[in-house]
Image 1 (cartoon, rainbow, N blue to C red):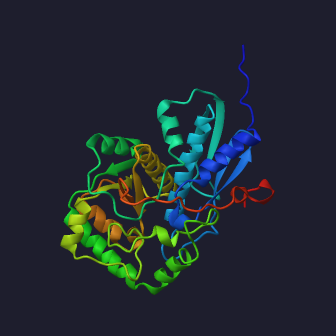
Image 2 (image 1 turned 90 degrees about the vertical axis):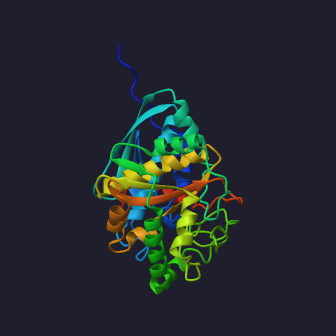
Image 3 (image 1 turned 30 degrees about the horizontal axis):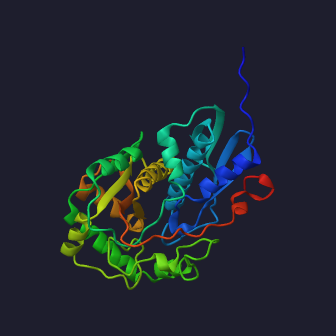
Length: 327
């Protein structure tokens, strides 16, 4: 007896997938992705027209963002009660193809992460001073661990503080970087439901590590003070075995799983990547912190001291390329 072939997606199911993908975190909230539906295959496209020449000169953060969207896409498929498989692509506009399979019961773990998609927040403010319980930290780390991706709790915080302090001074004086950052924050507000960019009121005037995006007026504490602040935070560094596009996708997908695990425990977080684009910074980070692999992102998480509003999102219609074709 043969089993029926997987049914194609209904308009309702496509809407579920689109809404999940639209809620993924992205560099400067640029939302650099689109979806191409082909029966039971869904292509995740990288929007290369969304470029941050100073912050992300090689597009690494853009691909990390697509990796986060891929996690949301897979979780949404499984929440619909369907099996799926993701194939990562090393070249071309399609970064991954998700093949949707036959009906399959959703696991409690997958559904818990799916439910957290709407609650995940980028929190660029301070956290409560109380530490996150050890079992919760362990669960967040475990959610991000996967083949080829290593989730590291950093040691040698004095060295990390020295490196971050140096990066902050460089970026705060980089006029081209500051102009680009201004373009992505000046006209965005948390009360706007539609759009892209980082809301001005979501940014913090406080010093590192709270200030994930370095502006000209960001206070720069001395290294000893910064080391103390880092010690009071919950920090993870996501590292990969290689440094290819598929490694960046895998890192973004793993980071999002960890972030959703945190959100399911009423935690918020933010990602720091801009120092990692400075020449030689990642090599120094590996050397000084004795990291395993190539660092792709620093993730900080905790309980929010102030509420975090959701970031605006582009209209769902912009998720789909014109005429349904890949560019």
